[in-house]
Length: 151
Image (tube, rainbow, N blue to C red; front, side, top):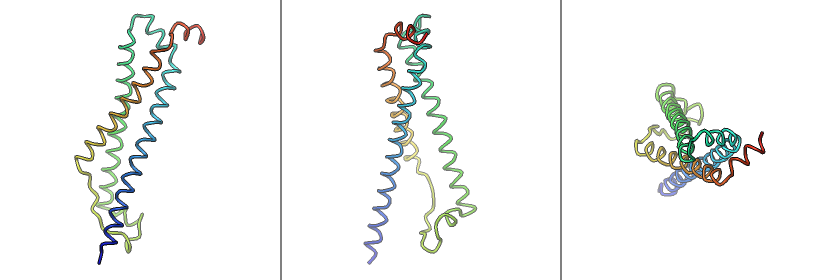
């Protein structure tokens, strides 16, 4: 009797999950673009760090640490906002303001710890990829030429 309804709800859950993954993929591409532009914008500084004796590996680790700190801060802020949203829904029923309570199913909002862990792992992996690829590209550039051109 309710098979069509449950199939529609399952399809909706899968659609929202895919939409969330697309958002994460697009944001990862945006972070990679930001990292590439940041590295190219700071090519002169990277060249100066190399002339001061820092190896390309140390400079890469510095950028990886910088990207990691931004990723962890962003993840913690997003997690805080999600918990804040759940808190407000629990005590002020904000989902009733967003969706019509007559047609809205009363779902209890909660976050599974496995979902948090998987999201964090996916976030860290995308951050590492979006940092390593630009650093690989910048390692192929001649830093002395970069200094000459940008002076």
